[in-house]
Length: 326
Image (cartoon, rainbow, N blue to C red; front, side):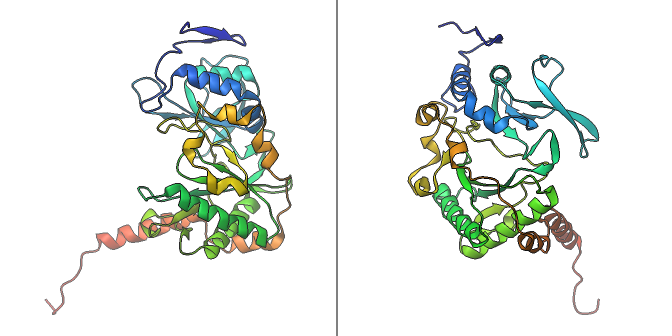
């Protein structure tokens, strides 16, 4: 089999190279997987500003937001001002198979779309709870699953429905589609409220503490995936041993799976041509004003953590004064 070929007018090169250390896969495996799930993954990426994580041979993985100068004309883009870097960033829109294959040839392994569409950057489409178990803990994924069920209960308390998928790493993502009238600020507030409710359902294992040292070995219910944040798309491979894939799972099946069940070698066959994520996602829902107000009373995690970090740093700098009057 040739190491080079052409599909959809895209030249695919060096297909026999290892994908990354520990992947147990080649670049061809990545290309073949993404091509086989092109319909479902494009549905998750379409019209959304896209960041990708690429892996070049012999280099550490890196995130690419701004498309490179050599990007072909057929790749559609959307340009937005980035306040952090004080510049315009041209994000790719992965809207077709040709663009997806071009990204695969660029060794783009992970696909992280925005939670807004390019034509409505002020309107978020999903709330996301990212359930992140502690590093090094035994049964990490089992812990994340327990908290996912707590999040499911918290959603039910306020009349909302969500869908769940493996993150492709060690955790779980809970997605709640919301209607077109949802502002970024309102979505962020509602997500904080849902995170706090999840913590109350399972306080023995769930925490909303943003600072790692304050989590006490519990699963972090991350409510910060709003606004300009991104999250790994359904069906996206991850740069982890054996190249797992973020995969949709029915709530009733969540206790019976592990991340290793879904890799770039196995995930496409399990889909059998279906878009399982689209099937599992409920219709967009309206967020009630009470839930948003509840969240507005909860401090923004990153801001609170920043102020707390500065306070602790200042305390560490203080020189203790000896007692005894001298």
